[in-house]
Length: 111
Image (tube, rainbow, N blue to C red; front, side, top):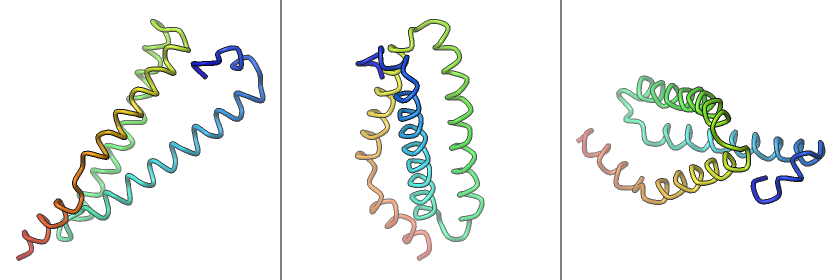
């Protein structure tokens, strides 16, 4: 959408963009929640997972707030670039996580 802003005026393109965006966002949330469930320490898993859910929902709410703030200062094409940069940053952070090490640490607590 940022590279071809003229397509934003076409209803079909906006519908396709919204479908892809919301599908990817839903899949990302489900993936984050499943990672959170896998990384939860069993004795406190319910509370820990509740925090994961809370932070996920806070992220959606604060993202909506920030989008409103950005729309007052940036053009929509620039906002799409910001969102792309945030998505790439999130992917880089996920690549840096060592989930196997974290699981080993959790099992060491149980021993």
